[in-house]
Image (cartoon, rainbow, N blue to C red; front, side, top):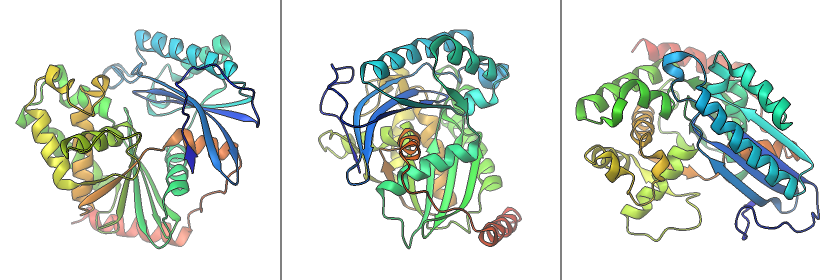
Length: 348
């Protein structure tokens, strides 16, 4: 269980009663900080958190490099996060960079700047580690025993998928289907006409077919982690006429609701999308791409609903630092079976 703080982020700290950890996720769209304490009885107790959207993936698909302005925004955000860690008495920090930094030609240079200028131990993680950390967090908060589960995390640069059967990980896949990347390539200049969205969805479907067997994961329980899914959950709650709660964790969303949102948002102007209840205005320009990936994933694995997880990679990092129970490792025979089934699916 993860308990959230009652105080506002940045509030004056109380003296640490236990060792405090901090996790920083340098993503393609957002940079997020989580400060917490951990014990085996109560789990993670969140002390503080901070989020900003420097959008490191901006222009990456076109240039192959991190944009200088985005780098400066990210450095400013990380400097504020370092100050929060110092104020909160953090003893250990784990900081990871994902798809944008991983793929960028100047990604290693950016990491060196963070280490040298801010003394934050940032490291680039591969796609498999990224997916595993997200899954660790989901497995900590959902009962997965006896379930066929597909965890999806749509970032700014990539889609991470991890599949498990009865808690045993069998599949990890990373696809270049991030919301920022797809928006820049397929929905430029805030255009969201029907033909552009259909073209985008056709591209997403093609990449999904190459990456995951629809047959092997048909009717799996889909759990969505990350900003696209939490935004989806909040928008759906608003459209259902429900009051905005403290969290969208555990909210169930139907495939039909995703389709309705895509059609409705596509009919709005960019300014109208920024006013949508439940949607962060800073995510308004990339939400359609994220929802297109969501809709095509549900269609490909023939699943009618998904469940939103409010917890993701940062929580997985904290659990790893705290020495929480490891997730199950893949069985080679099951991985071989999945590969064979995927090959059969690709021939359909």
